[in-house]
Length: 355
Image (cartoon, rainbow, N blue to C red; front, side, top):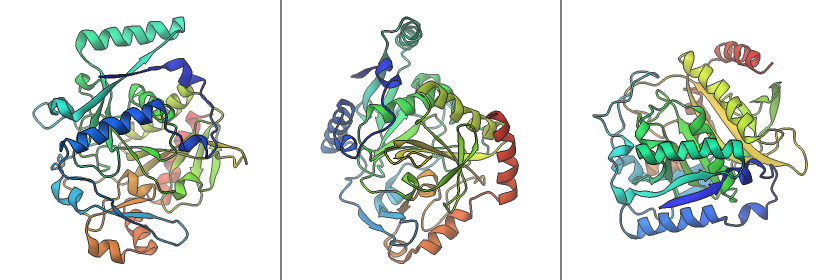
C-alpha cells in the first residue's frame, strides 16, 4: 500500500497557516488516521490506547503531562546502547523484522520537474529493485494517537544517525499533514533511542506546547536558539527558507553534534514564526544537544527524551503523575542538559557553519 505525493507541491507549500487551515484533515491525515484506527481495531497493538489521563501544569511552561502506564510496562525491551556510533546489528531487533500487518503504507514521492523527476525516479527504481521503500509502521506500544514510526529506506538498515534523506522525509511528512497537532520526534543513540535503526516517531498531540511559541533569538543566519526554555537548544524554521535548504541546515547541526560525540534530540512542530510576525506560523525544528546516557533507561518518573525536552511529559506511574510539579519536571530535564559552557563552545563552532 502506497501514499504517493508530489514533491513540487511540498516545495512550494505555504510557510504560514491559519488556525482554520491547521484543523482540516489533509489526504495524508485521512490516510494515516484510517489505517492506524483499523490496526487498533484489529488488535495489532500491544494494548488499547484509551483516552490517556492528561493534564497541564498551570505554571509558566504549561508542561503537558500524560499518564501511560501500559507503555512503561508492556513495551518492547530497549536496546542496550553503549556509543553514539554503535553500528547496526542485524541480530538484534530492527524494523525489517516487524510483522507485515504492522506496516501501514509506503511514503512514495513523485515529481513532474525534469531535474527532480530524474532524482525521484532513480530513487524509486532503486527502491523497487532493492525493495527498499520508506515505510510508515505502527508503534505497537503507542505513546499517543496515531503514533507511528517513519523508517527511510528500511532495507538500507541505517543506524540511528540522521542523514539528509531522513530529515527531508520527516519534513515532507510534516507538510503533507494539515494538522497543527502532528509532531515528529527523533532521539539519537545515547539520547534514549530504543532501537538502533534509523526512524522518526510521529503522532498527534491535541494540546498546545510552550515550544510552539517560546521566545528565540538569532545566532547566525537561519540559526536561532531558545531564550525562554529550561533546556537550551538550537532552533530552525521553514519560514524564510525552503525544504532543501532547511534539510541542509538541520543536517549541518546534527552532523556536527554526531561528529563531536554529542548526543542530541530533534523535535518538529508547527508554531509561531521565530521573528514573531503577527501573521506567521511555521514549522519549528528544535535540536537539543544533551548529556549522553548509556545502558538501560532508569529514570523513575519519566525518561527525559525528545518529547519530554519539548514539553510533552510521558509519565510512567500514577503516583508521579499526581505529584509532579513544574519545578520537579525542570529539575529532571536539567539532569540531561549540557552545562552552559559546553553549550556555548558548541554554539561557537556551529555558528561558524552558518556564516
